[in-house]
Image (cartoon, rainbow, N blue to C red; front, side, top):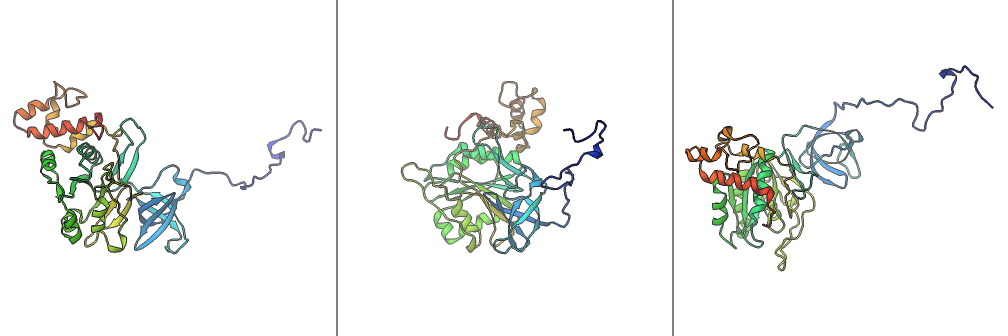
Length: 336
């Protein structure tokens, strides 16, 4: 039996309210102008530990942020319970614009980018001189990622009591970036930590390196006593270290202003996301010479104008060799 007549109007139809009410949906998002500013210290299974003033706050990401994820080093805006008391939870409602983003991929064929850290100023590339053996190809890849992200690289060579640093330093001398050589004995008495700290003061520095190179041991020498992390050892059979750092963590630099970000040890450092044309920006002495290059020049081909630029004495040939070695990094695996 028909309930309504032939000429019913929309106003005649009864509308049953849904379970969530009848309030219309809107794309307008709250501005949260009174939100507190904070910094993400670490991320663990959807919970983010943030520093707000002098308090450590546990927070979760607001739904309104969509798929945008906050990472260690991000400056964020938080609302909710900001007391920092046990079992309280705040909400991240805004991720501020980033000054830098360090990314990597699992390998060169993987299009999925993983953001390692945000808002860092410097990338400390930590490698052991022995036990395990140094991997120059991994150093090259980290350098390319640093140059692409606009970070200043710092090479930290550990375990100099087991092998001399001369060969590695000679290999990277033409790149003209700072380095520090440390030994296990120096780390124990604090001398090496003081020299490294000079390069970190006033900066946010991300530490990267493969497992077993002494990265976390070095970080522990640089941060307050109550913030030290667990360290591991190198497997005598495989020559590889054991992962003891499972998530990135930002720690305050002891004895000076600055932040140290310890990251998990890496087996590989993919560069699928890096546009090779941007690497030249890290070589200001060579960049003017590219004006005569053919379009889409790889800077490693017969018509490249950089060869003539160097022959004319505008730059050191070793610098051109270093550039081409870095540009070729994507075609080589770290273990090659």
